[in-house]
Image 1 (tube, rainbow, N blue to C red):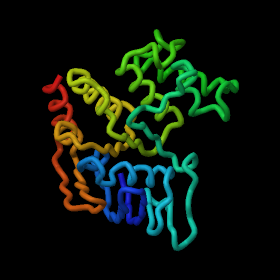
Image 2 (cartoon, rainbow, N blue to C red; image 1 turned 180 degrees about the vertical axis):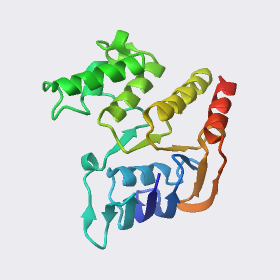
Image 3 (cartoon, rainbow, N blue to C red; image 1 turned 135 degrees about the horizontal axis):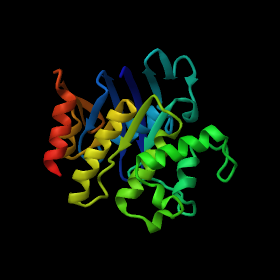
Image 4 (tube, rainbow, N blue to C red; image 1 turned 60 degrees about the horizontal axis):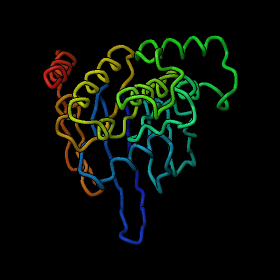
Length: 242
């Protein structure tokens, strides 16, 4: 991964004024933005995805400038080639599992998919073991299946980067361990770089090939593990927690 972020954004509410001012580079294909609640993790992730516009600065992924306030560049979210899994998964409650995954490929929900897109959805449902519940609604499936549906939808359009917003926060302890292992397997199988945000040390232990620590809207530390067995180590850690 080659992601460069240098942005500022001020958020105002009746309770406080929060200033996010971060500058960092992500060089590993598995990385964690780590910090306490309210530190600016989600705001940063939303800015990278194009869901929130910074007040100033720039965001670059590889050779592509996604945002540059000075140059007037702001690539729309749908054209950034970034998959995003929200903390609450943001599944469409009145759509089936199949329709939720297909939504990433159809211009409008309910529109007919091209044959190659149908094949893509079918393959993702099979890969995430969702075929048996393809006709079910989000309220009818388990927490783990909802997360798999959100992951499948995020991967449907073949993103260059996958962003995960506290993906295990709403799961119970036992399911968290299993889903960490599944996300690592997604990373291995689909070969897509992942940037995950969390406040949980257990997530850092599994996904922290590169860890960027954020507190009160500022980057306060970084570390990178550079060894040839990083993937094996991460997977072994996840398996040890299950």
